[in-house]
Image (cartoon, rainbow, N blue to C red; front, top):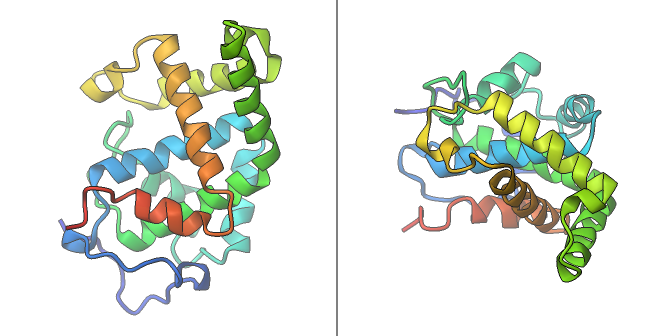
Length: 201
């Protein structure tokens, strides 16, 4: 299915430096759509004001030609096939790039917190302690589990893989690692190309 994007629509300036990839149909693959949405859920779980920061990021990054409002963002994110209300619509490469820009924007805002939680988790593991022994980490994991369970379709086999709290905790922690990956000066480029590992011939 071809994405329905106006070819005359101007590409936001911030997206112009992302590598041009030869992707069949010019649409974002299934795995990439899932990964982008999962990363946004992780970042939302870190920050109770993430929805407002997302809105501010869309304006600041000049992405309003692609994401006009919250409803448009919701529709784009519902291209994740694992969501309860997933829309059977393609995600164009430029829409995926916009999500990459937003993920990197939020990750950079929260770099210190991401590092703090990853360091705390490593220390807990070294002492054979559970995340419950660190308040901020425990709060992040609890919010992530709640967001994931409320938004994902439990009838999908890929969602069932995260049936236990421990499985969701591991996913949440792995997403923190990916978010940290986005915080450097080339974070957008690294995240963008990583989405298509194995997809580009």
